Image (cartoon, rainbow, N blue to C red):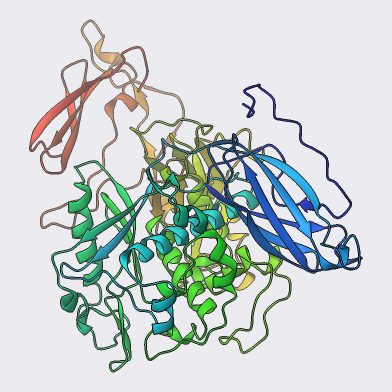
Length: 637
């Protein structure tokens, strides 16, 4: 719906001049799902007449304007972060430049363009929760230089504002990356609550209330001194308990959210009591870790770079262009890559995003955020880059799309089918069956089946730490996102994707479904070997009343083959034995399978197949309690 309530989008005023900003990153009438989006564009023909200037973004949402924001133009290119309210947003981009003054001593003339963007918040996907974790006796402050403390403070309120803004940069960056990979501007969402707005400094100063991202403040049962124990410090080579901060945070957060069995939370956690221990030369109460179990997916990171973060949209460009030298008398130079304030912001915001990538299921990759490419994160939000102490080189005058940091394609594929990224237009899928099956069949072929569809397959070479090759099964038409439920691939097809000197290497596969589940084939050649193909007994007639004896056991048809499924269970307990069965209904033509009994206690003990004649076959053991599932007699099994 348009702002006026009609079914069509409001017709916008045409650009006022050839120098009106041309938006290149998003089209008029687009639908987005993030409160803040990245918008980029250019002025006139940059190659013909490059010029510097300023873009002022004016917002109008049902008469409630978001404060105007200003963004630099460099050589006729610009980038801006735009705040949106739910529904249609009318956005005006005003360009001014001293080179385009209406008179020699008059004010610069204004050149305007307009677009409409529909912000549709997501409420059905699970949110990424934000948590600030403190020690039980923490004063609620973070490391900062004296000048920073004097100018803006370093209390809990400022920490919340900076962490919230950093999270929105993660979201805007991810949404833009998803769009560039043809998946729309989908991204993880946040929980919101009615509170004083902080994403605009003007809202914060005037006390304007808005629905903005909630940040949970959680105190753990450890003191600050206990959290800052050098044995917990991840960057301390002599630390004996490097992973314990993750457990401490996880236990505390699980209690805070009161996670019930079968529930799941996704949480990005900022440890506020991180501290640069100058004497020890390490950051205490800090660990960069992401992952978790079935109930809690967690990404933790320290607050040691928090002073360099922007606390609102207006501070994004100043934060990412601040060349103030890092004063290691008060704050850390993390990994010796944070020699200036803007580089510290890159490392802090970007490295925490890296851990969020782990939280969402991404491993390390060959390029992108998951390979520390976040040292260029600033280029997504700023058109110009300052001098870098890390590379000892002047920054880029124009940061174009190809110069930016990015998510790897394999990260994007994981996110596309992740529950946190679902949108209302996505195809519903059966959440009761997330299984993936595969069978090695004749001719070096592999059949893969998944009720929610086969999304992509990662191909890994033995000994390689990273995945460099994969195959996708996505429909090229974004309007038809249905995945194939069965695919057949050949070993030759898989090996053709490998470099010439690796074609004979041992290959493993990671198969991903449309429900974000996966299964692994450790050795493709072993699965396709002859030992997984068995000759089935000929079809026979089962004995029955009135059947003549000379008909019993009579065979029909040609030789038949069966293909072994993947192993069910991975028990290594004493007494465990591998077991295989061939269902009698596959051998006897008139033997009817009526039901399946599942025997289970704390784990699955066995599966029993029950036939019409009263006989049964037991796969495993009959321990624990039993549940019986009747089958449709009209269907063959």
